[in-house]
Image (cartoon, rainbow, N blue to C red; front, top):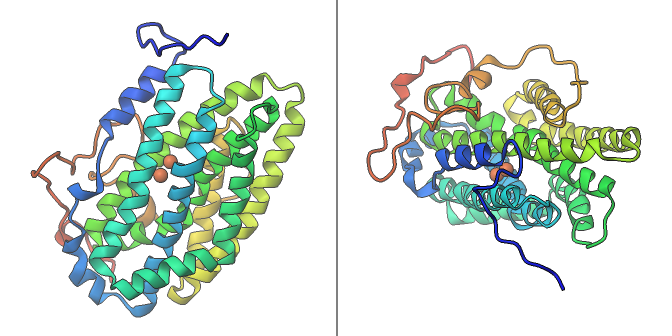
Length: 327
Ligand SMILES: [Fe+2]
Ligand SMILES: [Fe+2]
């Protein structure tokens, strides 16, 4: 007869569960604590092409967070032995649902009902987004089976890290790029909270994957499978980037950022970076480092974040405009 165990946080199961639990708690936030309505004037000032790009980027991000919340985290949790690690994943799963909802909070503020309907239809019909979701979901569905190999588990964890640390970033580029120049700043506060969370998720699931990798009977074969998956997703990511960024002239810069984050995903999985990265747009990199957010998951909660009503938002004046770049 199966014995059911209760999670005992007084008995250290591994080196990192408690640390990740505490860091996750420090980073807690909900979308309704932010006020994207401050961006309405900024939104109206954007070109139609820029608005279209922004909406598509957020639509794509919503799809990935939906997949991660509804399928990725729950399926992974089923195969992790440590009850404390399962708890950390359960917390992350809840945050993924908050992430997925938060894009709707931004949409509600800046877009019309028709716009919102159009964007969700676009998500459902965009072949590159659907490829991302179906490719990752294939590995998650394998985890739905009860009797899976360690290699299947490793690949499921890899798929999760690729989603968290790599696939999100073509979408994150545009809100960071605009915010770095003083546009859509209030909405970017939400996006930066999501990025801080995805950062910790990628590191944590990456560590779980590394634990499994050490026990694989044929690690070389598993690594080859990972590289094939990464390259398939990378090729798709380039086409997706072209589709949403060509009209605003940012394709080359986003591709560079995509490669930069592909390397980060590999490093989270314990492997060497393989993509050559020349120069990532400093506005976007700085967007991750401004005082309002913390991309480094060991850092404390955002300085711009206060629970309840005392929220101090960034103002346009906090950013020096680079007038050489057209918005
Ligand atoms: Fe997320
Ligand atoms: Fe995540």
